[in-house]
Length: 427
Image (cartoon, rainbow, N blue to C red; front, side, top):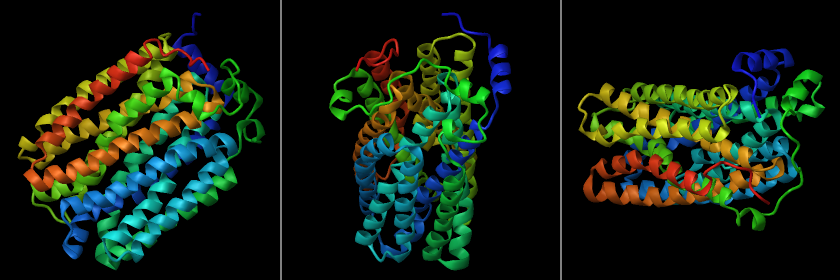
């Protein structure tokens, strides 16, 4: 089938209306709050290590329990979202994660921090299943990667805000109050979400033309599809194993980069925030570019299979220089190399997140995303324990950066082997 040219597609999209991008803005804000709450433990690592005397292995245990909960919750929320929809599913998620986040302010040691992280991980696991289901409901296939790239960019905005805001809160009020103050963000977002979000077919702000644009793809079944069926098809495992290989790298960046900058470049709470924020500012551009590039290629007439995979291949090459990051003596040189890697991760991830909506009917998207997120979290659990062991044993990040450099080629290889044409799953 011959697709319309990119200018014609853009003109048709503009004529249809743009309210769907308001929904992306809400998802962007939720993801930013999600990452502020998630990353605070990494930013506060030097402060908490000094106060509680933790080793790298102790810190890895706290991260591990977050990821245990994330693994459990991701697959659970995938099913919840498919049953109750994006609006209620997101509401449940943010209530749980905000409560878990604020509980950190009452923690007194390793066990209580691990318990608070468990609650946070359980709730935060609902962010992407609900967000991707909302994008699937609100966007046609040709725009989904770009929409996901945009809301996924909220992760980087949250990661930028955290090292700039949290040290100031700690210096003014102490680290416990910092958890309470940032917890308010989740409450405010929930109010906006409940007031604004509706399914597009029920939303008064959506014109008939925009609704027709959203529904331009062939109709697919809306009934819920069981895990037993999803787990037997290659397409589910293409997504899940891709997540298994790349999610641990992002967890490593998120939780260990602050400590790495602190130690490698002799920084403190007042000085390491700006370089860390710069890394995530660079990665924010990667998230948007990755989604834009594959969506633009599709609009230009290339198949989703070509568009997604060529974008991911370019991203895999962009991560390679991080292998040599530890040998760079300039902090800003390291920022550029690490920032390029995190940007490539986000661009790769934006396209990987789109695969379930490319290959599965709407009624299965949340469950497939949930399965993939759980498998990715299992990989993250192993990476957390491995990182703690390597750093306590060797004090060097060289092996860890080598793993980062190679993971994306492995992930793309698995995806292509299992879904060479990115065809719809035969359920």
